[in-house]
Image (tube, rainbow, N blue to C red; front, side, top):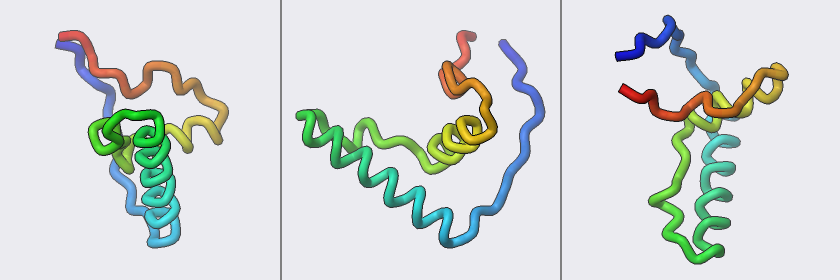
Length: 70
């Protein structure tokens, strides 16, 4: 089993949470328009927050949230 490094939990204010919800809904709509059931591919708010934060900080986002191989 691969041990993950320590992480932290953060609280998001209402404005950030609302923006993430809007982005999440946009993703679902685009997937639906592509002919796939969007709710099945709906990204979590945590995934979106991590992806956007890593991108903004100039950090790699490749494979960060992929499940680990046990």
